[in-house]
Image 1 (spheres, rainbow, N blue to C red):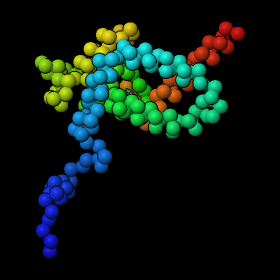
Image 2: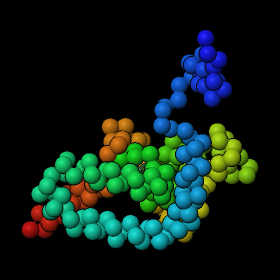
Image 3: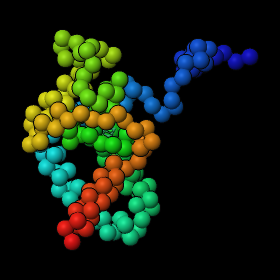
Image 4: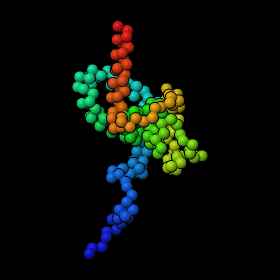
Length: 191
Ligand code: SF4
């Protein structure tokens, strides 16, 4: 019988305990990879706010195109791009109901408790998270980011609970469709 290879020791131990870790998700590795960029985005929240404003206007201008193709048909490719871009910049978890514009460009889904309306009562004296002591509280960073933004006071808005049915859908398209519907409702009222 062959000797167990040292590299398999951890896997063997894990198999014994039955602990479950999703195959492609390591919170620590993911954090290391994206954390620097995440902080950059928060530091540059004002520029990103300006950029998103222009970007969402262009998306809204393209509403007739999305409508002609069909929102459900463009969902997949747009979602793929959104996931890549926001994953890189904000460590986005694709909740499908983006609130970055109201949270200083700090994604609240990176809070281990996924709180959407401010920090829990466990923020450490140094501003770090009580669950992940090495990580600054997502909401402390959100407050810092919001102070740089033109509409930073939106951080005071009360956010709805996460609608799990919207997970893994494109927030960009959803916001566009809602804005287009609002605009059309206004136009038909004025007509
Ligand atoms: S709020 Fe949701 S959509 Fe926005 S960056 Fe965070 S996980 Fe992604």
